[in-house]
Image 1 (cartoon, rainbow, N blue to C red):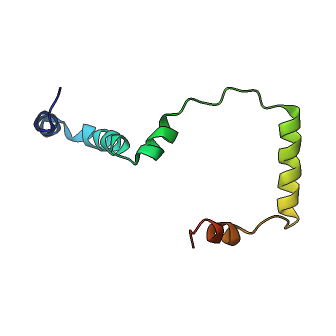
Image 2 (image 1 turned 30 degrees about the vertical axis):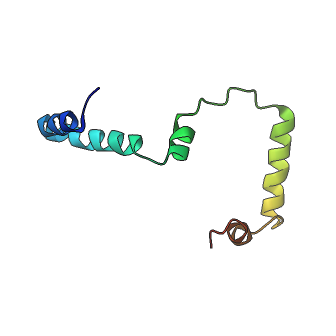
Image 3 (image 1 turned 90 degrees about the vertical axis):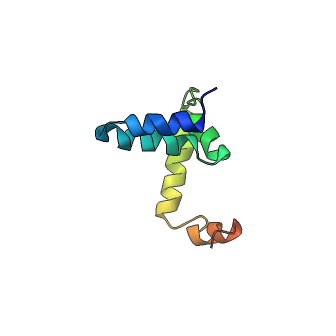
Length: 81
């Protein structure tokens, strides 16, 4: 199994142009496990049905009319504000 020391040595050998990509990848690997699960989840391959499309159109229209729950209220409900 590779060690942290080997990782450090590999980083030291990186050419400057590879540093941004390596940093992004390392940050990706070190994220919260729940976020990692979301980021690596398979794509939803179920069909987008006409019924779903119609519900989305109706929901967008309701939002345009000012109906629904304000974002601030949702944030409070989930303890985000």
